[in-house]
Amino acid sequence: MFVTRRILFVIFDQFELLDLSGPSSVFHAAQKFLAQPSYSIHTLSVTGGVVRSRTGIEISSQKLEEFNVSQFDTILVVGGDNDAITLISKNLTLRAWLTFNASRAERLGSICSGALVLAESGLLEERKATTHWADLAQLSRDYPKVNVQQDALYCEDRNIWTSAGVTTGIDMALAMLGKDHNSKVMQEVASWLVVYAHRPGHQSQFSELLAAQNQHVFKDIVVWLDCNLHRPLKVQDMAEQSAMSERTFYRKFTDEVGCTPSKFLENRRLFRAKHLLEAGGVIKSVSARVGYTSVLGFTKAFEAKYGISPALFKRLHAKSE
Image (cartoon, rainbow, N blue to C red; front, side, top):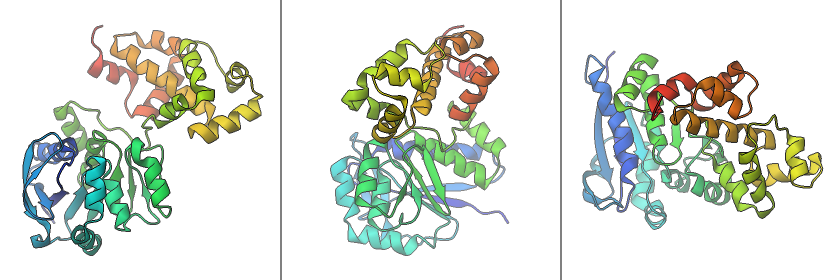
């Protein structure tokens, strides 16, 4: 049976405009590649009327209490600045509406710090969830019953979807599109919007780099690694550079940074590789310059990390050949 799904964006004063415009563009663009109208997009707010985004752009909205949610609706709460999120999270009207409609809608989700709104309403308890890296600590601290995914672009747990910062809302919307229809439509929309065909949800936000840079004891190791990525480095080399035993270094690094030293090293290699490919680097040369002994191993690691082959990434992003 054919259905038209409604995508319901919940907005509020000082919301993040990109959290609305990015995902809504995915569902709108899908109409170009589908035989029948498959999505309609609606913006809802507590009071209805014009709502001002944090950029100053104003968006019209319908009053959410006057909107009847159905089984083919997707509710998405957008993010916003800290004060706006704190204020809207305490709004009893929104909390009651979300709680009432969580089981009525096909999907309930959030973009960026919108996850804090869902968590405050108790809707993320015992669920996997993520948010922007800057809000992960608060999500873990204030809502201990949430299974916070520290290293994800987006998460799906039954009918609950959450995504990290801003542009990852596009990745999540593409994943929803692929689930509603097929991967071909998802790839066509991604190509039309000139974004990645699809970044897997488990891809890192690189929060571990920020964690390492913020730890005085490991600050220098980041600089040293970036100067030596071409070498066949091991955890033992990192430990020696930090003047620690390998066991002590592994434990302290993992505890403080949030990922293992070997995973951190791999992430730095692949992050460097992205920049080299964007600069037009030859794949074989890039592979060697970031410490891989084989192009095949590099390609597999790159695809696992970014959901796209080095060759396709270069074709999409290289500034010069």
